[in-house]
Length: 138
Image (cartoon, rainbow, N blue to C red; front, top):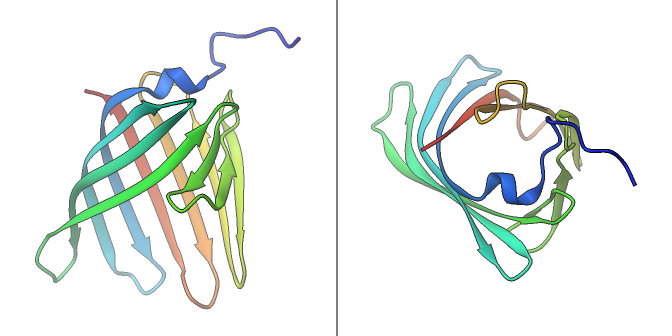
């Protein structure tokens, strides 16, 4: 058995309501900002993740945005339809999602827990952007 350190995250650590702010910079220079909340809520042995808020894209009117994921023991993250997305390293670190022809490279940073950061760099012919999210307990 692996010894736990104070930075090891478990599924239960995420349960509850979080504020989320996300900055998105597209390769064409378009900037966007999402502000809202993320709720991780138990359903049987997993957490359902529901994110709601406002997305502001430069030059456009703000609009409502929503995203859902399923989080499983061991910190496996799946899309709402059940497809695998990625695994969150318990102490933070790099993640990857293969979605040909696009490539998703990310990282989780838990060093300021209970605030944490998630960044993604997405490159490919369909999508090309940098995204950084900051979560803080409500």
